[in-house]
Image (cartoon, rainbow, N blue to C red):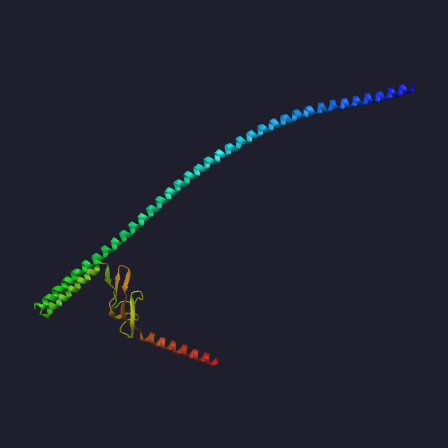
Length: 241
């Protein structure tokens, strides 16, 4: 009886063990199924997100390509404009140089034409003297004065005029003092003699007038005293050192 009881106890134990294994398998099956379902659902959602991302990337690429095409068109337009500006500048530069050369030639031509009239008068005077038609000194003088008058007129047409000097105040921008003469007859700084006449073209000094300028004797004495005092001071300073 004890053996039967033992067998029955062992059988019950095996049954309980087998029942527990079956229960565990059932639990595992039940737990695996939801996991599998959830995994499949997750995979489906991941696939849908990837497609959305791909479409977004494609849209962004299309936008960038359109922007690149716009930049290329703008670059071509700017390049065309730059080429046109360069061509216009070169044409303008050539035109300005041509006009400048033309103006220089015209100015030179005008100058020479005016001087040719003076040359004509000189040749007529020389021819008259050779033929003995101008033996009279008055006639020669008249011819020379005519040539001088024609030459001055030609210079005036070119905008050239003489610089006033005699009895004028000395102006260092117009005059060049070649000598200072001590005198009381003229006011200090007055031009008393013109050594060489000066000329201007419009507002440009072609050649300053070379003149002699009056200096007051008082000013000369003051200058001498100042030079003397300066020399004495330098001498005394040298002695102290």
